[in-house]
Image 1 (cartoon, rainbow, N blue to C red):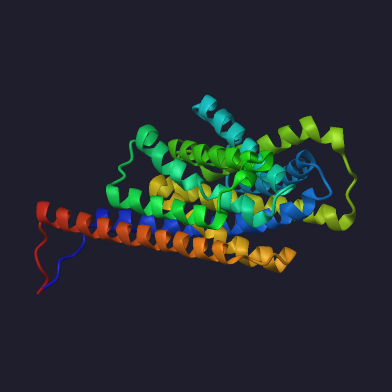
Image 2 (image 1 turned 30 degrees about the horizontal axis):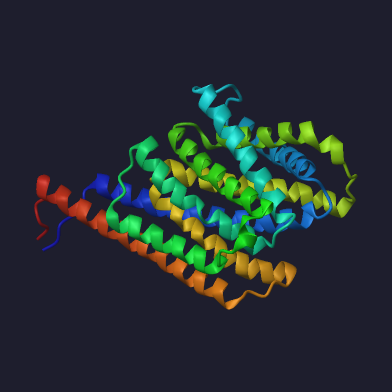
Length: 311
C-alpha cells in the first residue's frame, strides 16, 4: 500500500527544486558574464561597461515587457525597490572593480561568502527557519572557501575588501528580492538595468574610451547575458526560500576553475581544488537536507490529514 502525497506538499517540493535549478543556471550565466566583464574592464572603465551593458539589456527587455503587457511604472513599495536597485548597482560595480586587480577565481571565491550572509539575514528579515544541520552545512561551505583562499595579509588588500563588500551587497540584494517576490520578473530586472545605466551616465564620461565594433558587440552581449542571469536568480528567489537556494552559488568556484583556465589560462592550485571539493560537498549536503525535510513534511501532512490507501 502507498500513500499519495498531498498536492500542497508536491507543489512546495516542486517549487524548491525548480528554484534550485534556476539558481544553478543563473550562477552559470553570471560566471560567463564575469569572464566577459573581466576581459572588457581591462580596456574600459567600470562605469562605461555598466552603461553599455545596461543599454543593451534594456533594448531587449523593454520590447519583451511591452509584448507581454507588463506595465512600465513605479511599482508598489518604491523605497524598497530603490534600495534593491542601489544594492544591485553597487554589487556589480564592486565585482568589476575587483577583477580589474585580482584574478577571476579569487574574486569569485570572495563572493562565495554571500550565501552565508543570506542564511543569517533571512532568519531576521524574512523569518525563514534555518535548523542546525543547515547551519553546519553552510559552515562547512565557508571552511571550503577558507581552504581555497588560504587567508594571508594579501587578502586584506583594497581589491579584496572591495570584493568582500560586493558579496555583502549581493547577499542583501537577494534578501530584498525575496521581500519583493510578488513583483513580476520584468520589473525587477528593469530596475537593475536602469540602475546600471544611471550609474554609467554619472561616471563613464570621466574615463570614456570609444569602443571598436568587436568590443561594442561584446559589451552589448554582456548586457544580454546579465539580463538572463538576473531573471533566473530573481525567479529562483521568488519560488524558493533564500536560505535554501542561495548556497548553490558555491558552484561559482567550479565555473571559476573551468572558465578561468579556458579564458585566461589560469592554472588552479591544489588548495583551490581542495576548497572547491569541500564547497561542492556542502552544496550536496544542503540538497539532501532539503529532500529529507520535504519528506518529513509530507509524512506529517499525511498523519494530520490521512489519505485512504490505494488498493
